[in-house]
Length: 280
Image (cartoon, helix red, strand yellow):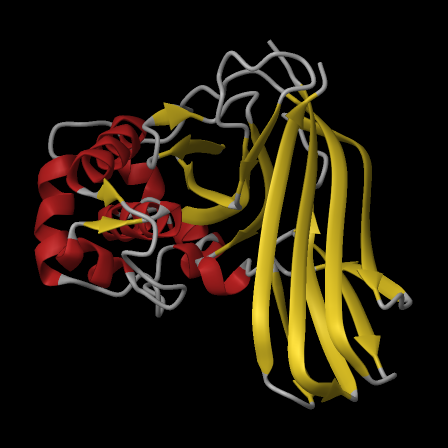
């Protein structure tokens, strides 16, 4: 069963003194693929400015814009309507010898290596070996995701935007970003290429038409076991019609919704709202 979903993501900044110029990148635009179709999407700013779009190295659509008139507030609104597909199934087309093949290692090297958010960890490496033992790669992906779901408690504010997978593991709590990072550490240690996915989730499985939920950006993982497929370790569910993907990368650093540089007063407030509505 597919859904049609509208997402409105609003980010507002206030500055203590006028900002005279700023240069920004927004990764807020869903892309069409085999499991989702983007009906309409736009990114608007206030103050208004001309924007440009390009697709980055990882396949994410990026909206860039710069402002050169003094301003004390900035609002960025991304609005999209997306038709999503049915529940994703695990892909069992590659065994452990296939994942060690030179062409696979060469193609996915960057998605097998540690990063600042997903560092090497001796304790987690031992756990990854245990989770892998006696299982096919696709089974190991599910086992690792479910293990992370069981080990971490979801608690908003327990970690920060710069927290690593190791930080979350030591605290035994975190948010969706941490669940995804910890799962990536396990999968990459096993030798399974894996990437970070950011997007949105309608939080009500039985949502009525036109029902809107307030939320925030969501994160999950995708693994390559002969083809790419995803799983949501935070909720311990397959990627399904309630998920909308926006950006791909090695970790959160590659998919941050908004980033940029500016000259002027310090940011005094940051407001982020996400409204997700089932339309069909």
